[in-house]
Image (cartoon, rainbow, N blue to C red; front, side, top):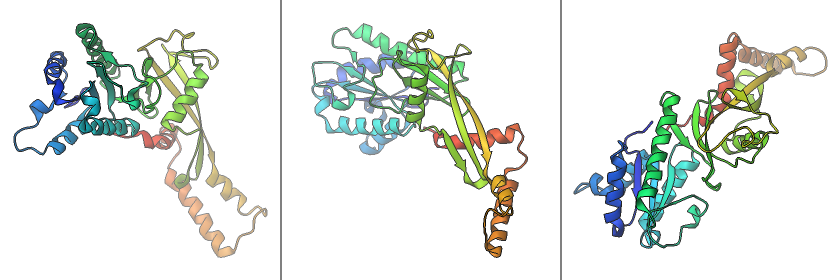
Length: 304
């Protein structure tokens, strides 16, 4: 879903003639652009308006030129965008090179558009990318699309990744030669998904298993993404199953079986605390179990 100030264009003022053309082409397809030339009025706080534009941006386009790579302003804007991406709350970073210059180290592994050689071809690739994101989001009822949080992996190969469990929709960078098993490990590590998690307030310990689904078919763990027919821009789902161990009930049953020693006053208080945890869960029907399991993924409930 494209939001207000969807695209922020970071650039040097030296490059405004070309950036003017870039802004015109992007807005022509109905995408909102934050551009200092239009969005900073006389008397406005420049840092304040820039921070506002960055905070609302879904896409961060950085125009790379000999002038911009030396600009402190551009470097600060890039740092802000990188932090947004790492923190799961949403900025896609798209480098566009307009003349011969040294690409900043933080962007060296990223695919960039080379406008200096062929503007029309490069700008069309950018417009197609923006439109593709919109089209895929519509298949998920205009769900918010989040950037991948790994800023070190190349963005040449990408997939759209969705989960109903943590209800997030990511544009994920990957290697199509990875097996499904390796891909799952990578997703779990990057998004900090739990294999096991204790929910102390309910006296439960959850264990999770993960799988990948493409075209409504599960992918074998030893199959590579390529072997499964997956290519650039495809959508896959991550399936998540959970089982729980009832720690509170287990502890409650073992309290008076003679295997443990308690001071009587402390034992009564401990028993009461365990019963309160069990009571707090409510009736453990499927919907309630799903709610508790979903709480294990609450760290992903970040809004942009």
